[in-house]
Length: 148
Image 1 (tube, rainbow, N blue to C red):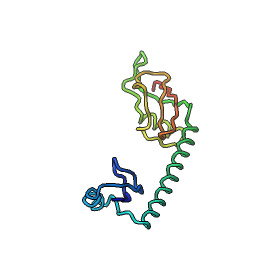
Image 2 (cartoon, helix red, strand yellow):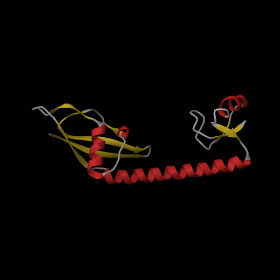
Image 3 (cartoon, one colour):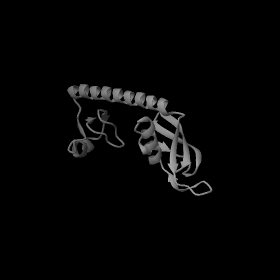
Image 4 (cartoon, one colour):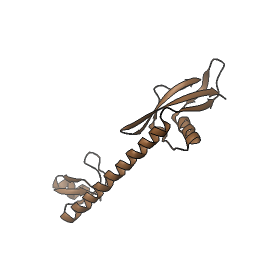
């Protein structure tokens, strides 16, 4: 049976996709749960419109990520932390601290989950962080940890 997905279904497709599934799966699960509707020509046009909107949104997100990457790539952000005499921190610098530093200096919101550190920052000095802003866009920033 051909159905049009009304919501994202893991392992099957995204909202607006037209997929072929077994009758029982469609009639007993997808349609009653509101995850899909039966395929018709009119609904096919709606699905095409949804697909166009999804592509336009993905394009906008990619453009926005590229602009953000260009604005922050290669920049150095200073973060103050309490440290001992040998330069060891009394804690670690977390992705949340880096996101706060970017927001404070540039006013750009970065999700802490998109910040990747090769290893935890536990010492004073210069470190690097990789920001995965989009599946196709990455940016590198430098972190300067100074004593408070």
